[in-house]
Amino acid sequence: MEINLNDSNIMSSAEAAKIWHKNSDYVRTSLHKNPKRWPKGSWRKFGRQIVVTTYGMEQVTGIPDPRKNESKKSN
Image 1 (tube, rainbow, N blue to C red):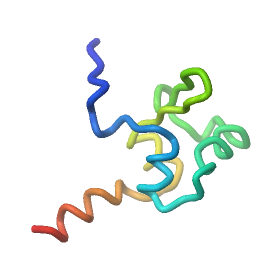
Image 2 (cartoon, one colour):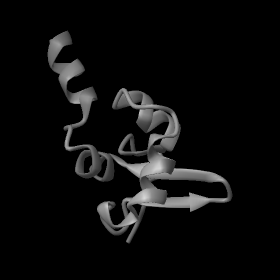
Image 3 (tube, rainbow, N blue to C red):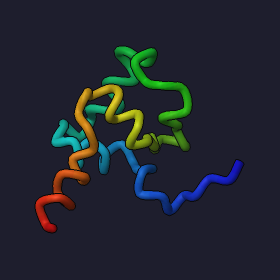
Image 4 (cartoon, rainbow, N blue to C red):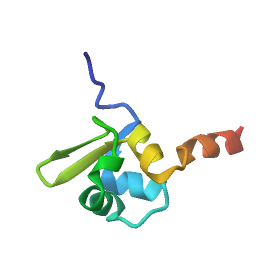
């Protein structure tokens, strides 16, 4: 299996929180309080940095990727 780290569906927890209009600690707090809400493989910690996927954020927040709406508005 090949993973493309340039994929826009992989992002830092801070970037994800900003995209979903959440508090900057949203991901860290969510993982700490309720880690079972996060689908397997939708997040990973590298040192102190948490990396998440678009799919994980959509599942936890219940909100589709807001970037999709922005691209529709610009068309």
